Image (tube, rainbow over all chains, first blue to last red; front, side, top):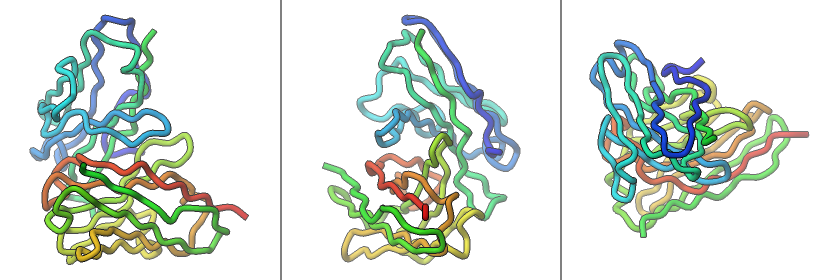
Length: 112
Length: 121
């Protein structure tokens, strides 16, 4: 059971907008710790997609955006493209744990 | 080019040991915290262990505490993960990752390609 909760899967047609939620608690997201998002395609290294809740690293298209409110965060992808089909993970920090870096369980995005 | 290159994975029998290495290049290794993250077959990403930039502070997931040891040699730009008493549940692709700062609060902005560990008799 992951500390951060994500839906197992989401889907959308090309061009559409999808969102992926990430729900935490008062000891991680709700405590003010940043949420980061990663894109992971099978057989490749995970890629940082969003850092610090809503910041995109250089090279990440502005179709990807992040937000955070209270004990939850969301990743939004607009103008869905076939190449976006991947697993997406949220990650934060939990000061109540001896292993403080926590991931969500991951969300598989299917582009229909 | 900023790069992390893992090595040391392989097939090991239950109860055996392996040491993973991760060589960093293209950045000042000694000023960043580092992590090991794994993905078991069919599972999500799991943070295994982390180490401060100086090596003074280490963290371990409950699933590996007492069996795994993380360390670093800043003179060699290398991160290590010594894994002992391995079990089938440790079968996974292991990634090393660079934190984007001196703390594990920060994101993991650079990842290696991963090294595969298979525990089987």
